[in-house]
Length: 131
Image (tube, rainbow, N blue to C red; front, side, top):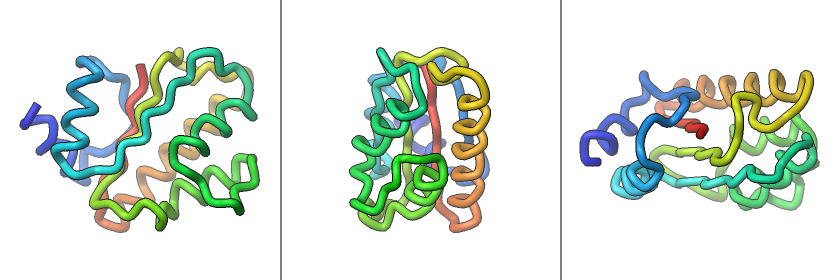
């Protein structure tokens, strides 16, 4: 686990990944690294609005969160209310499409990848793990 915590601190490797280890290890490594962990359970989530609400709840989105894709992108690229040396967004109980249908999966994936890139430019790792 210590090795994973050290890897999480690396900005260059941060990205969107399918988890291939025990979720407890990811959770513990995030804590050991001193990162903010957003542990989002997507079981039963099948729509854009449910997906947005689940993430908004876990990141404790501010009142201005508009429950749309732009608001998600803005919130994930701000997180000033959760100042941390790095972030881990853990999306559990989801399929390859984040349980979303149609174009919503592509939009969500683009937002997550753009968020990772934004935080890299700020010198902070932002990791997204799915399982």
